[in-house]
Amino acid sequence: MNTAQFIPDRPLETIEKACFTWQTPSNIALVKYWGKSNPQIPKNASISFTLRNCHTITTVDFSKKETTAEAVFELFFEGKEKEEFKPKIAEFFKRVQEYCPYILEYKMSINSENSFPHSSGIASSASGLSAIAMCLMSLEKALNPNLTQETLNKKASFLARLGSGSASRSIEGPLVVWGNHPEIAGSSDLFGVQFPYKVHANFENYQDAILLVDRGEKQVSSTVGHNLMHEHPYSENRFTQANENLGKISKILQEGNMKDFINLVESEALTLHAMMLTSNPYFILMKPNTLEIIHKIWEYRVAKNSNICFTLDAGANVHVLYPENEKEAINQFIESELANYCQKKQYIYDSVGLGAKKL
Image 1 (spheres, helix red, strand yellow):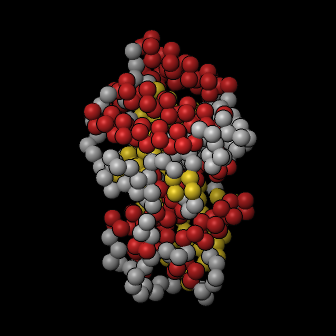
Image 2 (tube, one colour):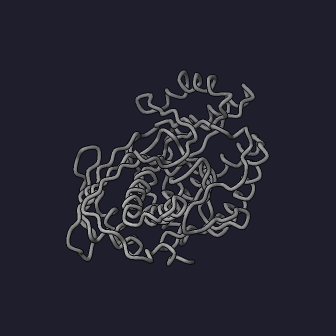
Image 3 (spheres, one colour):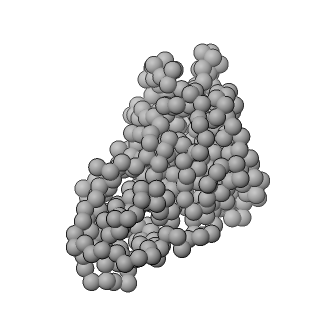
């Protein structure tokens, strides 16, 4: 794997101070990634819808200083200093300093805020780490004006991956593949790529309502869950299945078969949680109301001959996926019935978006 391409190969300009702000989205995987090797190499390829409304806004102030052996930074989340987040960010900077040596020459002040609750299964690390990666790449662009947007995006995805695997899929949109796959041109384990084929009109502007069953922090982090795949009795079969499913969903997205989409996406969600149920130690991230919502969706789909379906990330919250032409009816169903199973009746209406945005 050619990581040398991401190391700056020319002298960089000097800038005393700089400040950049990026809004980067979360994403929801349709074919799930669960299991990795170091450094953040996926055991199977995955594909996700990039979201529009669930995002992180991050500002990084860079001030020139004497070069140090480690990155120097302060971190504020929603206006408050967050010491508990710092070890993860420090580890991220350690991993990327080979590719961004200039960060050792700056003190960084990082200010972030989310449009959704962090650590509750809406891929907050995906939007958070991709936002920092885009700020780093904005600095690199200022230091090296010859950098193209294509190179910038690719390297941002590469950097984001070193902090959170799913963050590699939050730079671009509307569909991003991460992980080397023979049927996806240009795909790589090192960075995410936009789905390279024309998507059927059925899947344009797809809707995703996120039902907040549990706004609390997950009792088992995704990192711990991924590590449990190393000795998992079904891991190899799962990795094979996921790669096969990515090949299948590639055809579905191009041909527009909604029933096959529903079947594959729901199966992927349940398989992800089945891996958790059969890990050692085993764990359950779904809540009773997660299951209530799933059954309600199944009943509605049959009764209304609808194309509604669900998916889940590593958490209790339910992503309700549906085509734009059913938006009005399904939003009414969410408000009148499904909201009752959400914590304080809270949910977020979202749809497929186009990726990171400089503010």
